[in-house]
Amino acid sequence: MKTIEISAKIQICSHIELTNEQKSVVEAAKKATSGSYSPYSNYKVGAAVLLDNGVIITGSNQENAAYPSGLCAERTALFYAGANYPDVPVRKLAIISRQGNEFGKEVCSPCGSCRQVICECEARYGSPIEILLCSDTEVYVIQGIEALLPFGFGPKELNK
Image (cartoon, rainbow, N blue to C red):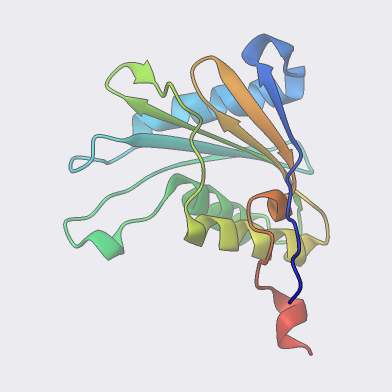
């Protein structure tokens, strides 16, 4: 029997400690929460992606009474970016939640499907995406999806 250990390096900082570029992506994600359609959960999520060309794309969660038919904020933003800027890599992704007028007390982390889409996006452009998981007071800064999805499934698994 063999055991392996998996660890993740995550930097935790306050909103004030972010770089100006990180702050602008986080602010865009905050604003994106207002576009959320979440009548069932009242859990509004905003995401913003910063592209390599400086463009910021936002998305919000879109719920549906037929639950599997909705879409998360992260995938909304990433798919829009991929469809409209297919040759421009994603550099940063910020995610934050809001209930009512209050931003989340805990960081907002992507679901499994969103993690897989982030994994594919990194593979598509051949570079890691800086992921900013935000709460109202702090931000987890993660350099690439591998920290959140250590055994991700990507193109290299299909080419074996």
